[in-house]
Amino acid sequence: MARVFNFSAGPAVLPEEVLKQAAAEMLDWQGCGMSVLEMSHRGKQFISIAEQAEADLRELLGVPPSYKVLFLQGGATLQFGMVPMNLLRGKKSADYINTGEWSKKAIKEAKQFCEVNIAASSEDAHFTYAPEQQKWRLGRDAAYVHYTSNETIGGVEFQWTPDTGDVPLVCDMSSHFLSRPVDVSKYGLIYAGAQKNAGPAGLTHVIVREDLLGGAQRGTPSLLDYKVQADAGSMSNTPPTFAIYIAGLVFQWVKRQGGVQDMQRRAIERSSLLYGFLDQSPLFRNPVRKEDRSRMNVPFTLADDRLDEPFLKGAKERGLVELKGHRSVGGMRASMYNAMPVEGVRRLVDYLREFEQKHA
Image 1 (cartoon, rainbow, N blue to C red):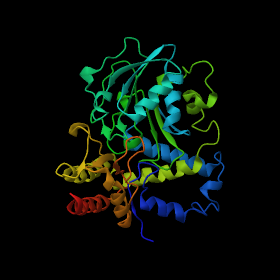
Image 2 (tube, rainbow, N blue to C red):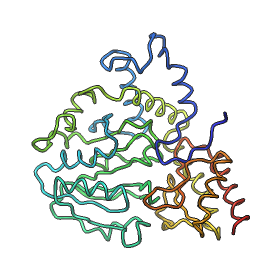
Image 3 (cartoon, rainbow, N blue to C red):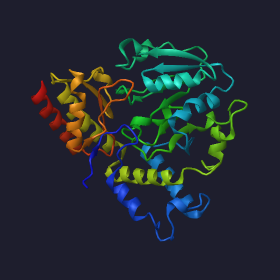
């Protein structure tokens, strides 16, 4: 059976080279006589896998030595609680930027631990833009400033990095992690669920500045304390070993492609193809302000929602799958992560044009 073009928002398409290598090594990893699935996380084989994965991620993003790289579990959603648990450090409030569904979830969780100041929001326009920083109203004594740099559901992406001065900037970077260069030194903490661009579900990447470690509030479970995890090399308990292995293969694949700079070039090429068609279409529409459009996640609607099911049926018949929009907003969504070949987007645009000619 031929592989389809998978536009899922996550778990998402993985590089075919990575899948083939994992399949080839499934029973016997590099001559050791066992699968990575069977390895002790304390054994020298897996330790070498984890160390190489960390080194490659550090190289790809230029992570400074003063930052710890952690491979954790619980998804980005667990970070919604871990961030305030660890970063309040005696303060009572934190600033949050509300730009969509994932921002709202982070805000809801943080309210269990501190006072949340909504410093800016795009809810007034149904989360279709990223609020300009000059309109932010940051708190006077915030422990940190949190934002979601790419909203997977709404398709809004910050094309700039906020400046929060001495207040640590915290970012949920899940759905565009490794898709473009990042100046890590501008952040106090970055976290990202792996299942978009950086591995399979079950793994979360955390990059945290060392001076922010050690301040977890009293009662924080050990496994949710960044310092405990950092001191143990992310192995305070059994880590998601196979997910770390696959993520490591993805990092090596990104390096072979030319690094995050080339991932950015490809993302621009893919998204330009799709937005270029949507912007001139009488049948399909993207609601996001142009300067804030995501290169990874492109939501769009049809002029008549009665055409939604025929559209999805025809797409599936052409090997274009997982185009249905998130249940909270409806419509369609094409997620075009690093492993999506440009040919997949060309096929999608060809189908959009064909469907438009038939139904417009």
